Amino acid sequence: MDDTSIRWDKDAQMKFDQLIEKTPVFVRDMARRKVREKAESLAAEDNRSLISEKDLVDAFLKITPFGFHGPLKTDMTEIGIDYVQYGYPE
Image: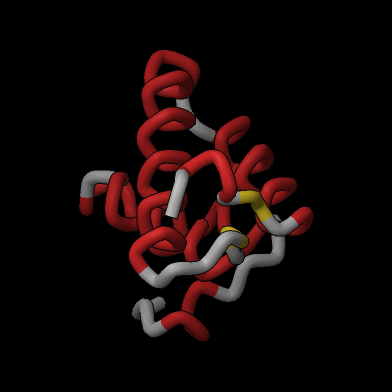
């Protein structure tokens, strides 16, 4: 599947933008690029053309160093993402 055919679910895109805004400014651009690439690759691996909230959660938690998962999960909860439903511990 061609990466150009992969789109973001509108809600997932909005939440991606919100989480990026909460990312420390000195790593924001790198996080934006790496998380976007990871979410797109997760959708492509499953032959899907739409990036979902689950892809967003998976990408953020795979790219973010483990030591920062606590603050990331707090940020996810604050913007209405229930990451536990995707198999992640609280």
